[in-house]
Length: 375
Image 1 (tube, rainbow, N blue to C red):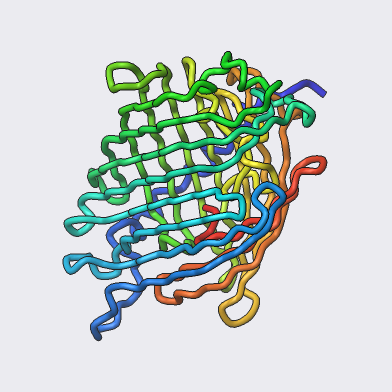
Image 2: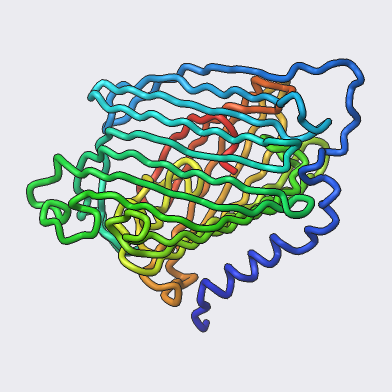
């Protein structure tokens, strides 16, 4: 059987996700189309969820996550809710993770502000760069990073926003293995430094609901240039594509699809390369188990109700990393499968807590407890 290059498959999948988007426009940012109650509705909800977990890397970890969902006084009837999410984690090994994630609609959804601001003081793992890095290459290090991602977008058509994007990351690497590749300092990013970039972002959103969509599309494309002109120690360009589609099957059963991809030209620090794994795509792999300048992933999730506020999901995904986009091969893709349970603690905004278990190739596996769906 002849080898088939992955970019061709990925392009076909992306076109399939985008096809038929026009009929969904009526359910875009102007409103969900659902009948509205004539009585005044509560404008906000605030939920705090404590959590605890154990892993060999962290020992006992505990913290709290919160989400404040609200609608401003000038919000459109049935329009998108704004939200501010925050999370704090502390572990037995004195590891700290802080994160703040605002997502706010302004002036009747004419403007959209979103951001991510995170601080990490955390031991991490590095297996080298490339899709063939062996398990035996694992080395430990500690990162002490601050990361920010800020964008302001304006609505230019129903369901379509465009605007500017600024990314900044300060990286500090310490406590590296004495014989590891990071200790030598030859790998970009191993000596720390900062990366800042300015770019553009375009978003097309016709989902019928922000937190628990059952129909519509969400497509986001961004291009960011990092360089000394904007205060960066590293010079590279980053292109990111996040394409999603949601389809209602029957009742409350939903099929959700996503392809998330990053492509880098230039010399980026190893902390900002495309990293396979984590709690959002390719669940079952340690985040960064495989990393390189280019990354492609695709996943499908089947969501269905079980009882009362409880639901369940099954998911499967495939992806890989490569130094060059032309080097992706179907027969070298990594795969991921898993399942999870959901509990809807906010029925008005349909916000869920999720517990997923994912399995990758070989011995790769992971458990994830989060607020909101993976995508």
